Length: 481
Image (cartoon, rainbow, N blue to C red):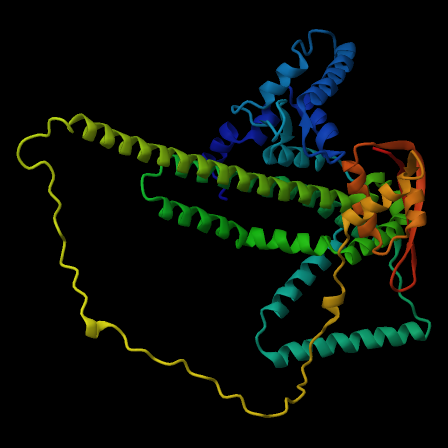
C-alpha cells in the first residue's frame, strides 16, 4: 500500500483502527477490550456478561475521575462501539440464542497490537530475527530448486555439518546458548505467538466478507439458478484453494496431530523453566498457548461451517420462492382456462407450431455388438517391491466418544456420582492426550456433570515409547442421570 496523502487521509477518515486511536475515549476502549478479549483469548462474549464487566470498569473510573467522566451506561457504550460508524466490535446473534453477543473486529485487534508495541521492552533482540529470515530464505531456495543434484549436494552438506556436531558433542564439546541468545529467541517466539492469535480474527473476517458478497450477488441475480450455483461454488473453492486457505489448512493439520501437541507441551515446559526466560516474567497463560491456537482455530472452523449452512438455507429460500412463483403462474393459467370454458373465444384460440417431424429410420438404430470377454492369462503373480512408508497408516488415532461415555455410565451403575480421575484409573488412557480431551468433551455434554476449579487431579498415561505423561486438570464429577 502506498502511503501517500490521499490514501492516508482516506484511512484516517474511514478505517476503524484509526478512528479508535483518534477517539476521546480511546484509553477506555482499548484498555477494556484488551483486558476482556485479548488477554484471556476470549473469542465471543454475551451482552450481559460484557456489559457487567464494563459497568465494573466504569464504576472504578468514576470513583477515580468523578461521575462526569463517563456518564453513559455500559450497554450504551457497547452499542456505540458496535455501530457501523465505528466498527470496533461485531454485534451478532449466535444460532439458537436470542441474546446479542460481541466479538472484536480485526481492525480493533490491529490497533491494540500497535498500542502494545509502544511500550519499552527490557530486551530488544535482533539475532533471532536474522536467523529466522535466513532460514526462510533457505527454505524458499531449496523448495524451489528443480535440479536434483543441487538439492542432494545441499542435503549432504547439512548432513556433514550434523555429523561434525555429533562428533564434537561425543568429544565433550557441547555448545550451549548463552542467556542473551535465549532471551532473544524467546522474545521472537512470544511476538509470533501473539500475532498468530490475531491472524485468526483476520481470517474469520475474510470469510465473513466473502459470505456477504455472495449474499449480495444472490439477492441481485437475474440469470439462471445453475449459473448462480456454479459461480458461488467456484467462489467457495477459490477461497479454499487460495494461499490463505491452504496455509490455514496446513496449520490446522499440523496442530491437530497428538504427537505435535505433546511435543509442544514438552518444549514449553522445558523452556519456561529456564532461568533466563523466568527473568523476563512471562505470562502463566503462555504455557498453554498452543491450546489457545487450537481454540481460536476451532472457532474459525465453526464460523466457516455456520456460514456454509446459512448460505445453503438462503439458497433453499430462494428456491422455495421460485417454486411458489411457478405455482402461481400455473394456477393463473388454470383459472383463465376455467373462465373461458363455457364461452370459448371465436377464431383461433391457441396455435402450437411443430418445430420438425420426428422421423426415426430403422437403419439408424445401432446393431447389436457382443461384449468383449477379457482373456486372463494363467500366469503366477509376481511379488513386486515398492518403497512405501506405511507408518502413516498406523499412526492414525481415533477415539470413540461413545465408548468413553459407556465407561462413565457403567461406573455410575454402582455409584450415584464418580470423578473423572476415578474413571480413568479404572479404564486407563490408551490414546494419551487425545483420549483425555475426548473425555473433557463428553463431560461438557453430560447433563449431570460438575467442575470443581479449587481441586486438581493428576491424570497419567503411558505413550507407545514407554514414557509416562501426566496432566493436571480440575476435578470433574459425573452424576447419574
